[in-house]
Amino acid sequence: VEICAADRSLLKRFLDPQTNARVDDWGGTLAARSRLLRDALRVVRDAVHEEFVVGVRTSIAGDEAWLLGGLLRESGADYIHFVGEIDPELVHALAPSVVADRRIQ
Image 1 (cartoon, helix red, strand yellow):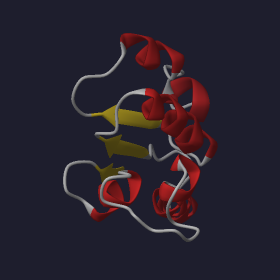
Image 2: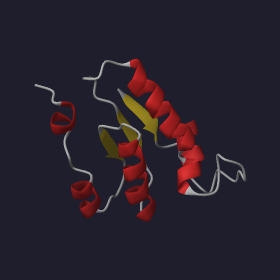
Image 3: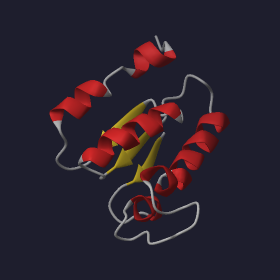
């Protein structure tokens, strides 16, 4: 299962500070802007068998990609599919594989 938070999706619009001007619990910091995505991720993770691979596709970049990667891993993402240019160091930092995490044979 891959949740799409890239391109022009609603989830991407919440993530992007240029399109999310909210001043409530859903806007401002990256943690707040990613709340909807992390909630969706938890709902999907809880709905599928524990051996299902669940990931997120996003086009967020720069320093926020590092932070978002950590938030998504904490929320249950097995992988993060970054669309567009991405720092190679980020790929290595978030590299623990789904095989190791979920023990899929």
